[in-house]
Length: 108
Length: 245
Image 1 (cartoon, chains in turn purple, green):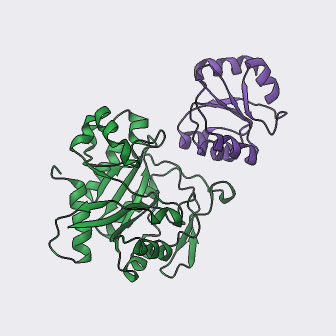
Image 2 (spheres, each protein chain N blue to C red):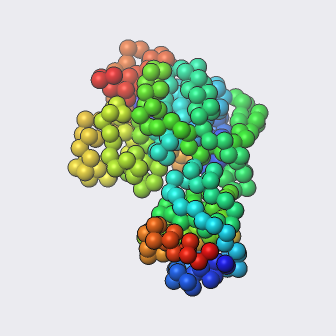
Image 3 (cartoon, helix red, strand yellow):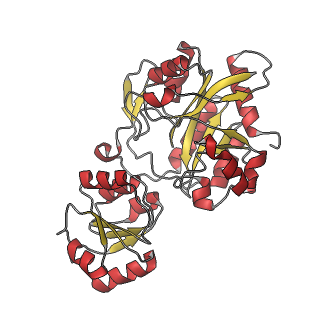
């Protein structure tokens, strides 16, 4: 499934979308960046409430297909700008991490 | 006696710091800012501390070797040591307990190790931003038992701070000092977290670039037995460790 289809199905807010056609394979949830760095796999969708600038760096390093910010967590304009520059898809959901993960799991 | 300090500074070894944060540039800027005591606290490494010691001595600054460690809970803690040797030993411990993920300089920035002449003598291969598996209580214990001092960094930050990750400053960790970035927020913080009332509050620059080093520094009241470099360093550590330990 592509990132753009995920956006439609889950009614996600688009914050940065340089690669709408990227294929999603599996997912990962977590907020401790060090933990995510060593465990999220390429093409995963990563669901988190963390919105620190380092989210972009960790997403690049792990090569995830998209980051989904759960619970409508606040995210700074600087982080979104950085994501666009680095080619990272960032989306946002109103739902908590648990519900978001379940919704993703039903789709893929 | 009051002395100007900055106990939380990053060099070019920290991936997020500018490459012109060389040991000599930091020491020179600290001198221009009238700072008497400066500590080098790179993320999870002490490898630029030997060069920093030499550079500070050239500029008449009292150097402190330190580290800003990332605990297992992703809490940033400033660790300062009375001797370079104690810092290097702690560095080895952290090296052995850190997640080994290769740095990608194109994403995170370079991690340069320098000598006292500001020449690059190496590059840290593994990303220094990743956490160690030492929890905050173990970090405090390890630092205090080595004669150093540990205190939670930028406690009011929404990420990377002890309050963000644990909701408060647990008494059991044994911290006597805490770092607050914005001192105008201190009263509100004390009201919310009463443990701060009895603690020594420090406010460092947490500089990642040279421009960050020239604003006003806070002063620390020290009881000094002499004007000797070792005595000043010991007095800083004594003061921040507090009477209870």
